[in-house]
Length: 469
Image 1: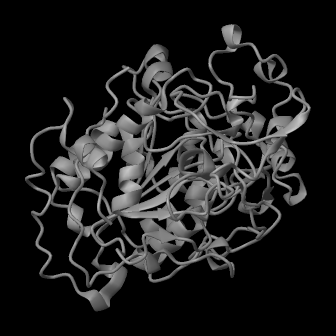
Image 2: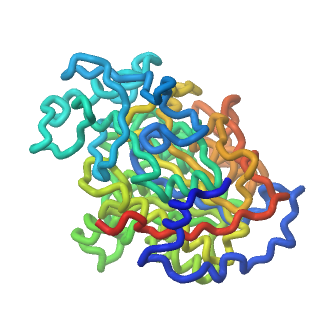
């Protein structure tokens, strides 16, 4: 798909953009074997941001299953507003700082409202700036009829880089968060296909499904690695088959003497975004050193030593796009752009697939009812995209049902001979209720690639196309 003139301008200007992508084509494409499919990929990278729904970021993206509108372009959907006493529609926003709403299990149930998809504002009714629509006190977080920005949606005018990636590579408009809850359960599913509580974390068979885990969050302590999660995560299988991996979390990891509490609060990852430190198998196999700061990711890209599998989660300072922090969405977009630019400039680009997503809906409106696969979910839709030279140009938008479980499935199919986190887990059993990678409705990410096409070139973007805040 051809980029518009405005997006090309955003890609080619800006103070933070180094010169050309000189190394991006450094690894030749002549040895790409179309018949080998995903086996052509040496690196899978998963960038996971925070708390945005699909409609909130891509509800007006051409061709996507976005916000339904009538012949005049006006939304035909709405959410009940207990303050205004009416069902209020979504609206386009230019505000870069958003408030959003609650995003826990109760809020998910209330928002979905048995499939009516109209309870998003009511789910946030206890929040002061929902009960009191006061711009002077709460900021410009309200729409044209006074509705909270739970109903707001962005477009390319406020998040141009994300729309550029979606235009040039491949957008996923049926990517559902893995569960009906918040960051910690979502990240547990990201790396293990389950969210549970264990009465004895050294015994996997004391673990049972839990989607709240609020008190457990307090036990993810800086400088310590208490064993909290007894079931098996994907790194166990990677370790068994000697597949390299790294989990890049924040500017500092808060586990070294020089990492002060102030450094942790300013640059470290939010604790629920870094759950691998609490997995028994990671501790038992001595893999804690695979959890690294962001600077190590850039070093690995520069030295062409990226691991086979990388997860990247944001640190503090507004990188995450979490609503309610007072940070503009452009700060998170800049952070993500710098990560992607680095890969695109490197020799790894032609053998890499980058997947970008957001861990939950952040309280923002979405009109699609999530499908059910087991007692835990799926959750509400989140944005997702594939950024790779081999993203299928004929596909443009993948409308098939996906969740974070599809990431695990791709890792397993590419690097683990199809071994699943199936309860047996290659010799480390657990009582998980579902092999999430094998549920019938989950699609296969391998269908998003075309290794017979001419590779899509790197799209080097200005991290700050709208200027630095």
